[in-house]
Image 1: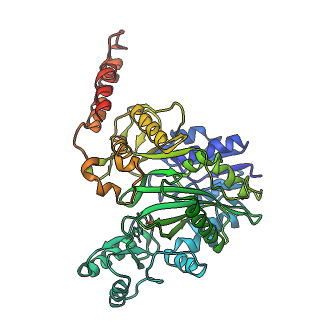
Image 2: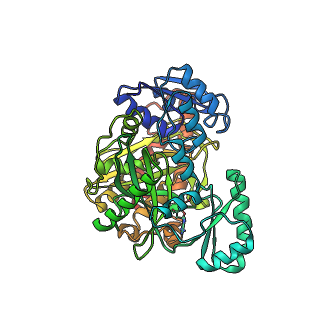
Image 3: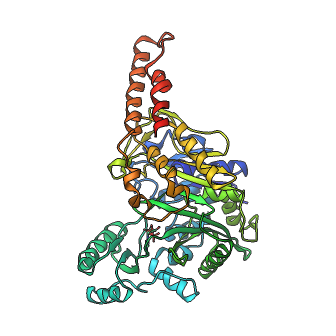
Length: 501
Ligand code: ADP
């Protein structure tokens, strides 16, 4: 069993991994940039080593520095979390070559699944349904146009090395094809250093449904059921749930079998996710495999009772995993919301700043995976996700009610957050009825981007009041028992505004 693990990541996921390590009696080493020096994940690790600098490139992406620290601190394993180096085959290889254990899949599996075109080819060879499209990247624009005509408009141009929705262009009309092709290739080139683009049929009104896979070194490959992640902004998930409201036991079995087949096709070991798009006739198509732990893994943990980080560590240590059969029935229902420091009304623009006040939600059936605390700074250097809130209940409706309750309880000031927007999505009739598509936010934009009541403005006001109160305390040494501005606001304005939301 691994004894000491370096966590090559930051924020909520680093803290989440530390917690499981602690339960398993494994020591932890955090690495951190200058601005993260006082972050909760750093303070909670057994050891912390600096990665001097601010940008990701100088810090969490510096493979040699991280490996150097792992060796010098006596670690025997590295957990990459998600993002950063988690899907970097070169890093996985270097870790193994240094005699350490990479807590993730073999480098070869990362490599093949890291290329969307290579992954599609492998899936086709193994009989896993894929979205109709070109097998290879486009080489010249005339052949590309011909291929797009054969596939049939609308089509989607996608970066072969893609991720995070970058280099993706929807082309509805043939007239726009050329221009979109050029701009997709340009964006792919600057994001991934590889401008290869291929074409997929655009599936209209799809649902995004993914299967959690676990595979150990003893030949077991299983799935732990699905997560539905259809609520997305800019092709990025913001609300996820398990199980999906639309899967029948029959379809779950078929898709689960296809997911296991996909993982076996690349000799997968450790935790991974097979993503599918499901059209309105419930046809499903392989989209991609994520060769790492997903942000949304807590909903699977709620409904299966498993700790996925623990399973990852067991597998990486060469132990059998705790279950050897796929899981097709679940304990209740779980919903996750990603809380972002962003302004939903400004096209979800990041809202960096200091969290002046923070009182997270809790109570029955609520779990928070957070990387911040009161006083934390949300910087522009990293992803603006501040926390993940998950709610569990016996059925979907109650889980939604519980999540809305928790979001309303969540008090945060100093930055704009996606909380009011998330509440409007969850409380929307179509969401409650399980009528989801990846286009949900566009489709219901008139309901979701309501101008008032504007909780974001109230939150900004709260931040100002809080600052005034802090200043008063510094000057006169306390408020002498008088009702403070912030508590007055808390008693009246906030509750009223929340009720109206
Ligand atoms: P990335 O790796 O860049 O995140 P994905 O291939 O995982 O890209 O797709 C992200 C999202 O984009 C999907 O969840 C879906 O909303 C949308 N999408 C991708 N491919 C298609 C398609 N062929 N048709 C319709 N929507 C798609």
